[in-house]
Image 1 (cartoon, one colour):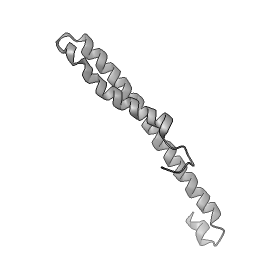
Image 2 (image 1 turned 90 degrees about the horizontal axis):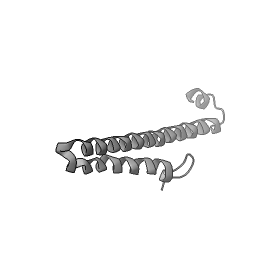
Image 3 (image 1 turned 45 degrees about the horizontal axis):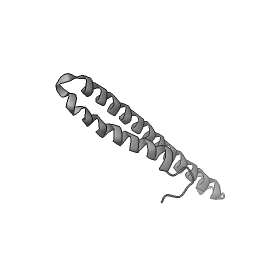
Image 4 (image 1 turned 180 degrees about the vertical axis):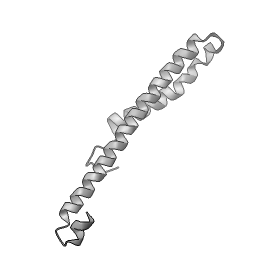
Length: 90
């Protein structure tokens, strides 16, 4: 990019490259949010099952709802509400 700017050529290719890098970073962030949400959801389900079937903590199984719900919110945001590449942020 620097060489293109210093050579005195049109700045449009540099601007296009910068925009593409921004879109790639945004896609990476959204994909990370989706993956994190799915992993946290699975941890919540596992914790629910483990605490439910482990007799001394049977009533504490509802603690598994905390990571389960956090994971669902992250995943749903990543899949449904997150701005797509090229869309303006709210």
